[in-house]
Amino acid sequence: MSRFAEVKSLVDSLEGDMDKFYNKGNKTAGTRARKTLQDLKKIAQEIRVEIQEKKND
Image: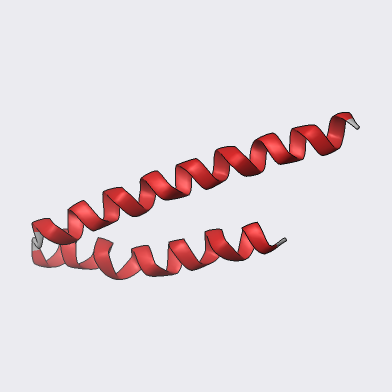
C-alpha cells in the first residue's frame, strides 16, 4: 500500500506543474510534468508486476 501513497504523492506534485504549463505557458513546468509522468509510468509498471506475482502465488 505504500506504493499507492507514492503514486498519490506524485499526482499531487504534478498538479502544480500541469497548471503552470497549460494555463501560464511555462515550458519548464512542462518538462517537470513530463518527468513526473514518466516516474508515474515506471512505478505503475512495478506495481502491476508486483500484483501479478502475488496473484500467481
